[in-house]
Image 1 (cartoon, rainbow, N blue to C red):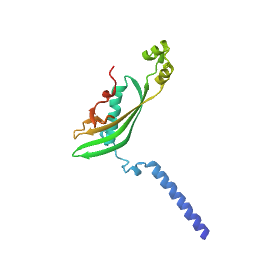
Image 2 (cartoon, one colour):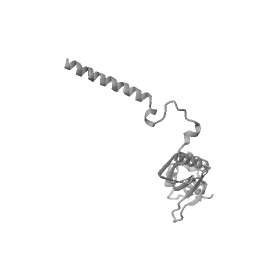
Image 3 (cartoon, rainbow, N blue to C red):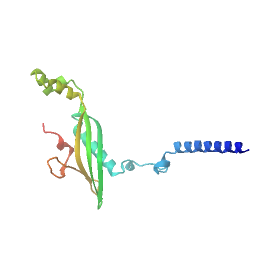
Length: 173
């Protein structure tokens, strides 16, 4: 009798575990606190300050750099946020990985010139042209009560937080 009871209890536990597994697998929203019947509006898809800044930075970088380079990735790190009287201030490091749009490096002016002149740096220039490049920025973004984002850069020369646009980081032609 005891043996049959133990087997019954073990079987009940196994069935309960399987039922819980299927419930949780089909109700992922159970863990994130969202009601599974809640429909997310487009405005909710970018609902955090971090998400707003991330979307803004990616859009600005694409607008400024995509005519020159293929943009591979965007990364925010060391993100810190403060909120004061309706406005938000966030500081962060921003990294963009890009590479030149593919074309034969020997058709690029400065590489072609180095090759024609027998410059010792030709092979290095050729190889570097095809590699991904990393751009790093130390930035601050403010979001006012109206949702307007303003960007600032902390320059290495000690200047504290100058107002900038991403296009300020492109060398004049």
